[in-house]
Image (cartoon, rainbow, N blue to C red; front, top):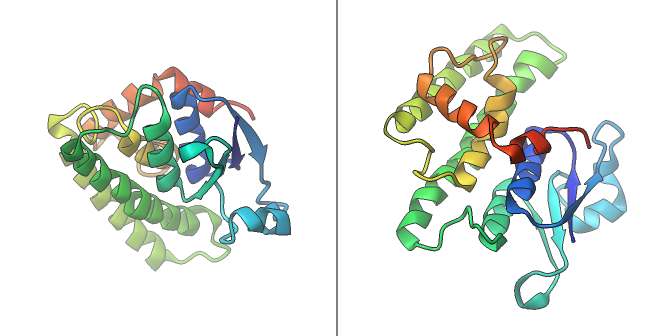
Length: 206
């Protein structure tokens, strides 16, 4: 049984979506960020960076227990461990998946989080920052939309690379924020993933 330390953030939903796709048995252990449970000394022992998500797998390589933080690392690990792998074996396919997995983790989510901070959570209204991140987000969406113009999923077949970008699109792709009407390929991609049973379970109550 894999333990998933989770809260309802974009990165948290990536890991939960991954677990639902995997078919592996797992248990959610909520880490309430509003109550600052991420700073509990017991939690800091498994993630000194006081972030979620984290997974603890008692049956890792060679039967050893493994602990992983960072959503991209979790996606790659679970995508490789599951029976119907969402992280490929073929080295050339790995290269294609890796570049988009790392893009999703390092750029797509990072920019989305900054956009969300200045648009929603910032205690101060800073028009220059809002304008900056709105432009950066739209440029990023144009790039991804172009990449999806000749393929169903971002790395060809559905993979961990798609999961790495889905949650932020789910949060900010509605018409209140960025919207998808100007990005028809992302909209098609998003609707296709949204229909997956694992997604419906992952975004349900916990």
